[in-house]
Length: 562
Image: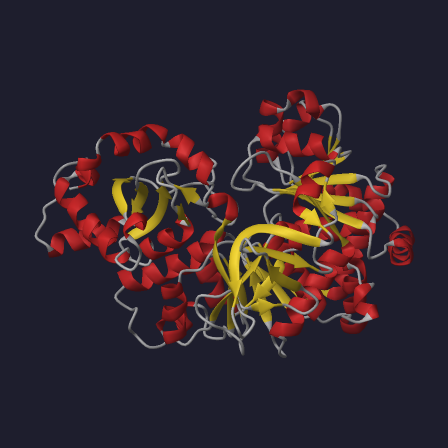
């Protein structure tokens, strides 16, 4: 990485693009019934006015500003404006409860909170009433009901009477004062266990990771990136938002996660990031429609112009990557953590190998400890955890960040993830088992939508399985099994069908890695119940707590599997 890249900030990225591209399209957003372009000059004008408005609201350098909102144009403006005001952005997942949001507001010591609208206001009024009167609140949308309980100002009203000269001064101050080492954001990791910790990322962390990602993936004239993952998560924030800023291409905001495929057909994007669950869901749709072997079916679903799909946030099953490649679409996977801004390694168009997460990106060092843990250092590594020096010291040593993931580097420099150090199951017989690998094997089968393998401290392994109901019913019909009972998931004939699938998928692993019993669930693991992270990674401890009685029953009644 050059000296110039080392000193690059998110603010310099956006200002450089405006200087270079001016009135060229920067964004495409849905307004009313139309998709409307926003050019680079218009974007910067909104950003600097919002920055000036925050300063007038009392925000000073280093202050924390919380933003709670789904993806929308105002989210992007607010993110860049907070940084231009030389404050620290604390994005919060919009799906969290009022108490969870309040925890992050209080833990970060925020002075100002931006919310999307009435839904977020109601959660906070109900679950965090004492906090409401202590802060300044800004809402993107009208909140007539909430105004009786909290002093709210509309985002648009804040910007309305900002003089352009004042806005330009805010930009000039930021360009002069914001440095690469400055704290840019605090992101609270939902994690798979324990309370969330505030990951501190600098301007250098964010900008360098975006530039390195852009360097290996490249860009083409006419590229349009469609984004739908929550910007409050570092994957979308760096790999969609800041990589777009670094490239100067065009960014389109999907209407909602459920609208991605429809938006692909409308907007004809060339680049898309997603999580494994999304790519599996599209594959299952092809299976259900009988199109999985039809040439070009997948290409057409994604609009016909897609040149690259990138999966992150959780392990990508190999069979999904194979299906996409057979269909003429390259689906590669990357690897990283919130603590690493996030990208550590990724496959690319030229360098991809099934079963790996690719090679480390430029400027990033990776090594594997004698215990098999993946370590990394470079400009992507966080500053530390907010107000938590003990947790920082536990994960950072001599510049190396201990990821907690287990892995291997092959002779070609490709990194393979073999398990999660903290997610290892240690059976009563002392066997160390990586459940993620077993779950990946199980979900290769179209019959199994989700699976969680358990068995820590037990004599054998069991699993909670979420079947694909349509596939299961179709398979039952093919075996002339008539499902008449409402409680058909406990039907012995259905269980035998699933057992055949489980045994077949785990035939490649050792005896002690076999699942000896399972329970079929009638609903997927969900974020609302705290069972998955925003990138749909399983929160093992919460799922185990939610289904503790069922798990215990599997060990009390092993014979039920037959």
